Image (tube, rainbow, N blue to C red):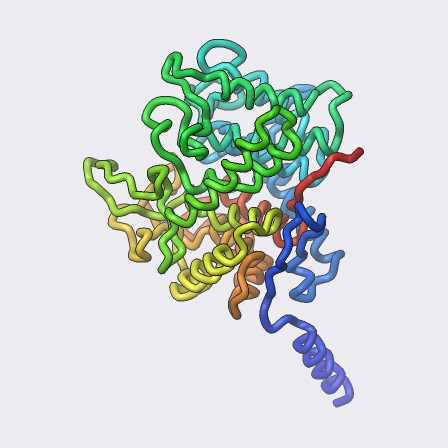
Length: 427
């Protein structure tokens, strides 16, 4: 009986210590240098949190289902293994993970591979990166750039400069400036333009072809431009601050105020692109794979800058309420922006079992948890708990995504444990 009362007292104590509701901070990391550890707010110990983070990192980089592969003595690539390639998306994500977690050797290996195989050193696309290469041979599959790759490369390199300095083999700041300067030099020769549209101050879907005329909501991370304004040292700080402002305003326009959902791509003014696709049909604007990143990106902007606090908190509550209404353990990974199920389900990968199928995807579980940094509702802690309990393993139908699900889950855990930060100069 005594043991029973001791156990009961312990449960009551833990319940009384657990927050009834998570409360977002009112200042960002640029100002305070501090970052929330939401898992700690839920009662997890530092030892538990650090061990979980290291376990997820090891799973993505070194486990049996890793997506990080070393090449020779000094290179490595991140592979979207289900699609048999390395992408600027994954390579730049890998760089960001490594600089955040102080993994210099892995960072340098990834950067050497990116520069050697992906980056154009001359011609109209000088300074840009081919977005998709076969692995392990590094042959180009997708020659054009995808602008989010350049966005992440630059920011990760600036952080590497701030963390490790530029006196070693790699001058990280010079590499970031090379990408930026190369972009600014584009005049339309060969159909190649700057990856940020100078008139709208918004990132393009691609800096070539039709992609120069529209954007992707998941490419919008306003706080990255504030990093550039502070530490790129290229004389364009005022332009980058305008980009941050324009990006936040754009997100207001592109996100459905009733559901919190956004389409994968749309026009610079936030209007939908009405073009036939997938068999000639005109489909409703839909929240699909790219769109999963938007909650996480807005969480980052809130955590670092906190410059759009009221709107971002309303957004966080809205999108979490939408997914909660679909069942916190059951919501699927594709919806029309109005919240209805899509008429067309996009395939998740090239392998046969990827299929045209809706799933309760681990990557989206992660990003809907990450936006808890900005939420002030009663349910956000449930999303955080689902991320803590999540496992990246094959779905019931055999589909498995070590790459996209794995990286988004890792990023989300970094955010919520306070390990995704503005890295300031060490000196």
